[in-house]
Amino acid sequence: FKLPMSLILLLVRPGQPRQVVGHSSLVAIAMLEKQEAAHQQLIFLQSLIVDKSLRGKGLGKRLMEFSHDYLLAYRQHLQANDESGEGLVSVQNTSFERLYLTTKDKQTFYESLGYTRTEPIEFYQLKSSQSRCNDIAKNLFGARTGGATSTTKETNNTNEKLTWYMRPLKSTSK
Image (tube, rainbow, N blue to C red; front, side):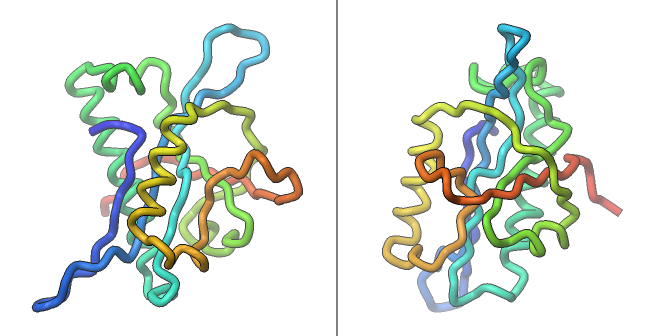
């Protein structure tokens, strides 16, 4: 277990090669604290991509559930083993209470999954983790990403209106 993490959804059919049909990217981001030198890390869904030809079939929902479950297992692993997350993420300075994300045009989708709107969060992110996860998605989907929806925060284009969402990280087992 570690962050940043890219999760891949594969379509496996007998006698056919595996096909990448979805990707999500989870990172820890550091909140900017104006009054304190210390910072709090939050968990952020950097991107969610589903193959355009397979949208509307519940794959995005399944990938979001898998991402959520991965974070719950990661939190439990860190707590059980009292590990610091290889220096990247530790239980002590990371809030595993909520998963944050941004979107330009998929508000209805995220609201249907239990996410609620929240105020934007000022944060900084290591360029290496952002680039690594973006490169993985580009390599997986290649030229097919032209129509893909991504929740990656674009810092260079201030004309884009991003809506911030959050959802508590808690077990959904019945």
